View (cartoon, rainbow, N blue to C red):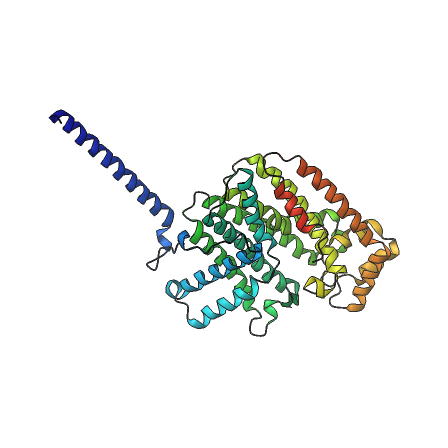
Length: 406
């Protein structure tokens, strides 16, 4: 080899080494920016604690969907509890409280919201001819559990505000003698634990900011719905219109129960089209409103054994679907006065029976069944127009909720 070619080779090698070194330096700096975005919170040493996807358990699709999904919750609880003594100086007693509180409140539900995130990811991957990796499946399940934890803390506080007695077939958390008002702090603790989970598992992902924004926006929307609902205690029955009911349930229920799981799956799978999100939102909000009408109907007419809780909407003076339609559109003057005298009078079985009697006299069960059938027709027509997303996403959701019994 000539001296000139040797010099050229050395120069290329040096240039290549410099290039590789530059790439490595960029990758390290990028990782530091992603994992240490806030030095003010990087205390004590070791924070932030991030996940290792290679250590994720196998998400076995051959098992019933909820079995693999439930195992991810146990992983998330264990991760959080492991961090509490070293990073937050929490004594054993408080760590034990956290474990008991999380197990009591975040588990035991139907898990439809959470498992839907995984199903959305699967349907989108299949439509692209792709197969999800184990890491992708677990991360979709983690997002699903964040929806379940969001649901859990909302219900914990909602039960306190509504003086509810049972939830998911057991006493509401605050009704336990050793809990009571501690449940308020526990509720907001579950909320913050949810954000800890997101940071641990997604802070190095390019869609982390979008996921955070989605959870923050959805939480605020839900709290606005809760405000619309709770302020009904200061309003008269004349204010309990169908329009107000629709506004309440759109914000209190539809966004977090229907739009959020699908939007999370879309975000994780890289969907960026604004029109795709707009289409999904329109259909899913309609589903969410229908779902809450179902909930109001079941609160009145389903048994506690079937529902898993005691219906209290009549006692609590709720602006509900049944009442709004009956009071403003279906009753005679005399029936309206009877409703006014008996609705929202607290845990009075006789007054509750009077209200339910009027509902039956008005044929509200048949009225609801027609609404349910008409809504299904409308939704199926809307789904048929979807082009940017797999229609199966929406059909799956509708199949889960149509004519549900609890």
